[in-house]
Length: 331
Image 1 (cartoon, rainbow, N blue to C red):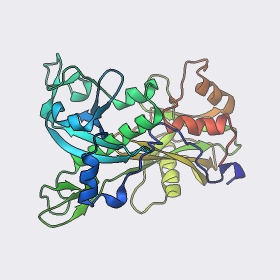
Image 2: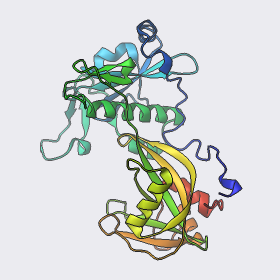
Image 3: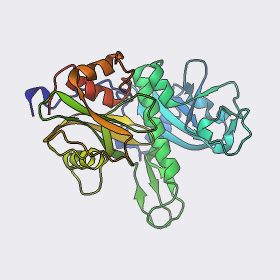
Image 4: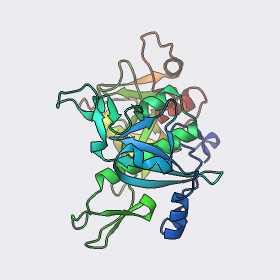
């Protein structure tokens, strides 16, 4: 690895990072301490209904003391305490507390409906991805929303014990689920995903691909889940070979990003290809090709002559591409 790739927080400030909360992990089982936080008149909360976020005007932050006014609460999780000692909570409302507005077709997914809280129809419901893309929220607040969304998504998907199948119960201030039947304990899961930019043997081209679901013209770094028994480097090499037929040797870690869709950690890497030959897996990718450095810069800067584009700055793929194309970082 070159000196410019020495370990440091290269992507500090990337979207969904930097929440600035003391997560209070050492006292999550201290009932008295947790009760004291919940009783703090300054305590605040973020409110979710069917993975959408409640807003009053431009703010998604509400007094925790008002929590009973939003509808039935399914989960209440302590996110942590800010630098001023103010506790932050995340609330997941029961699905019945959320209604679709003007949508009668049952085949339309909830993700594509306009939603409202039955108890508070005056509040707007917004999705996290659009909020991040808009840049309308302060980075620390966006990070807290991401933390909340990922943790609540874990609860929604793990309501039953994986060991015996009995209903599990939240505990540890929302950071664990306990099974009253077999006594198993379950902790929040984060799924590791490698996202990597392969660099050609001559160092002057990078590999980008696109999936059919991408916005028209957008190309991005390749990515895939880390499998059991793999190192990150092995996962990078495997995914690049499986999706594009590219063999790589050196792999350099650059940085990571929480990605709460639903609860992933994106692990950004550069990889050095030993050949520029491509065998694209059309089941995974619509297209993949090598982009010269000048063309990659045009993608980032939004001036590609064919109207092609790169991911927005909210995604770690943007920063991987920028690190190589504009800063000269190499694996």
